[in-house]
Image (tube, rainbow, N blue to C red; front, side, top):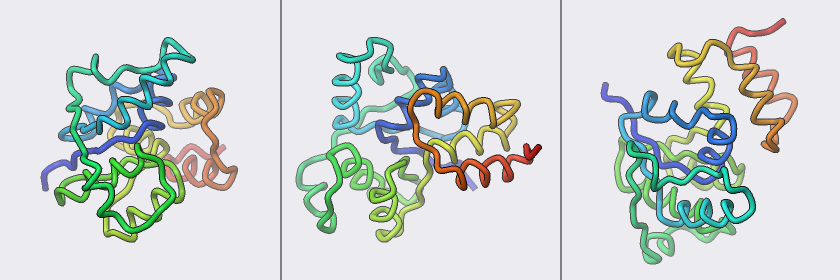
Length: 165
């Protein structure tokens, strides 16, 4: 079975970038697509924090156009343009996985039949594929950078990684 390709939302790139792990994406996925709307959100983030990842400088990433019509075709929702563009683009191919962390966005994507993965799932996948030696330090690092991880989800991820104390 060929490896899946990722359509990434802002949070995945933002937090993996903050902990210097964005390089994991091309090792885990056949292709990485970043909608223009996500690029613009990261551009705005660089106004606040200059070290915010710039997708234009990721030679392995493909920036894609998602039209207003594609986003308008989604069921009614209260998602932001980045999340909507990820879902709309992920609907264009069965090999595409929607990279989303927001619970509402994940719910919309799953209702549309999409496969979904978030930052924690990507780090767990990296651990399983031996791309990182341990999950716990990176979960702690993204949490320290402002990424919200529910205590139960943290515990479950550590358990799945086989890193319980």
